[in-house]
Image (cartoon, rainbow, N blue to C red):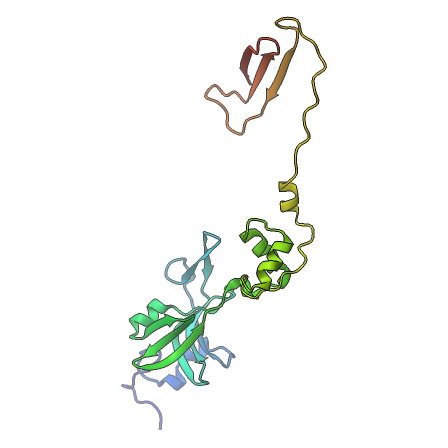
Amino acid sequence: MGPKPGDTCNYCKQKGHWKSDCPKKRQGQCGNASGTITVVEDGSRSEEDIAVVVDGHTHYTDVVGIGSINLRTHDGKFYTLNDVRHVPHMTKNLISLSLLDTKGFSFKGECGVLHVYNGSKVILKGVKRVASSEVDKEDMTKLWHMRLGHMSERGMQILAKDNLLGRHEIKDLGFYEHCVFGKLHRSKFPKTTHRINGTLDYIHVDCWGPSRVNSMGSHKYFLSLIDDYSRMTWVFIIK
């Protein structure tokens, strides 16, 4: 028994065939057991592109498919997510809470755990994960070193011993160039040996430039002349 001419496909909404025989559905099927993907034919950057914010900058990445996937939850059950965007360049799987809200779901977060409800039933649960917990011990030591204003290793070890650093083990900091170079002292200028008896006996000359931005007169340099005896100063703007 086949479809009647008046039967409507539940997939493409056209008449004359069923969803199981839909040519558009077969065209968009993917060999992934997690679900089916419909290929996006329109590659324009409008509704089918995803805006991702990374380090304060917005990047657009292409959506190559829209379909349904089977999602396994914390209790081992499977739920179907519809209208899922397939973005190959994204490294994380994201679920929009605002979209779940429009679908009638509710959510509540407390004690580091987010629960998504369908009525009174919990269908999704997510545990808060601190990004710093995934770094190794050496990176964690450097992180706490910067957080504490470049504290010494001994000071951080004392805090870690009292469980004041989130029970993180403090490793050897090694040569931390930012801290070492930041504490360097500049050598003193040598004492002058020249003798002056009057004006213009000894002149300090300095030429600065080029400037990254030209002045209103298109000048890029300036020349300063300082008389050591009178401290009289002349400044000349030059191109």
